[in-house]
Length: 629
Image (spheres, rainbow, N blue to C red):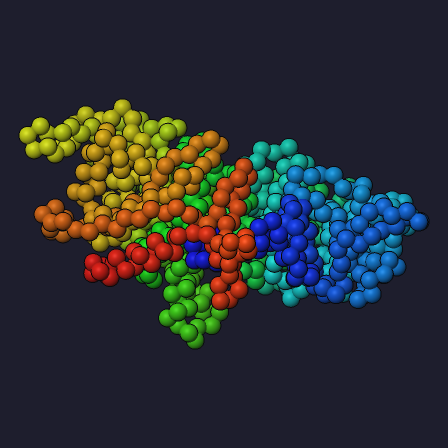
């Protein structure tokens, strides 16, 4: 997903010209069919950047013969050396587009008449590795193919120094998820929870002091597992998971176990074991994680995944600084919080040219632990947010599960129970970033909760003054997004600022005039940014929305505002930099009249988005109106 800055971390090749993609191996423009984009180009990059094979050892569309008969071109071939001859073939890879599950037999037919040692089947979301043998069984499942210079016996015998950063993780996460889902009979939410355990085990093992990895499985162990023989694999993983539960007690309960069969656990470990997640760039991890958790975010209570360009815009316009408490009271998977961390990290880099990587990491961790806070009503999503924060160097202790519309004492107690003690009382938060659930699927009907809020009461227009006045009568039910506006203002300190996604009905309907009056009488309206049609389109639902930017004011400041006119920033976004299809958000780039992607001075493709323009315009607006944040 784009980040609103004009650049993007891509896990799939860019269509540099309409209908064409640049081949990773040759650099030439080739037809951008789904198989090419979703699988072949992705695996070519993996072979070079993760497995370490030189490009000179690779070729595509290699004709394979059985006797005198041509049986078809192999999608990718890895040779032992630069010599591209049939008798020098080492690995054959068969690729398919995402929606294809066939091709294993085709791969075997290519392997049989060649001296290839290994084969791979890959469709961008699932992967299988085979050993090609001269005796029965002629094809045998293996945990992975060897990296350049490795043998099959070397796989899984990894020291910490052997691990390499991942060039791409999206397909790896998806292949693990799909394997567990297909083989374990678990609901998708349960699959996700098991995957979280595996990823935590991997990360804790990487950060442990032992030189040799415990998060590993060898070809020999995999064979023993498949034949139901005992080995030390599960014991190693359980040892690390016990450590995970001690170190991340806010994420996992002490009585939890990894509820996967030995085969599925071994598969998950085999897919991740060669990587260093610690050294993998945060954006690579984040892209994979966001793709992986997408289905979990589409809840039944009106929750909507916030597109990254919108997240980035909100953070840039509010301009968080070190020392300011940031809260998302409906944090979901933690996208707003991670973006705020990244934004402050960039400030650390800019302000300290001489800062070392280790010092920078310490600064980011300190900031996250002390100033980043998140609440979500869904405990599974709160756990997801913790995981996301850990991937971005931590800060997970500031996230917990609770209903942000509960009374403050209950929220405070839940925070304390989760190990969070600051930034969660009225008037204690400097910045709020929120996309609360919309109320089309259910209103807040609890009288106990409604009674806490001015906006939980009915309001009537005074026929004399024309002003709306609160009555003693409670609403029968109130959409949660309305109550969230009031709750966010309660959380804010004086001069604190907030960005909240709201349905346009709050801003335009005559029946919600009292809400607009409440906002006007209790804050300074900094701006309203209208989002384009389709921003939150999901499963036939397409709420029209805007981002409302407010600043909490003291009584004297509010009195001054009420007696004077002041400028409000208004903007209308027409392009976010992506388009939605049935499955994912596809990145959109600027193109010239011939359909070729336009690039910047650093050869990066430029997103088709006006988000940066809106952000720049708001910076000018602040200067013109003497705003100092």
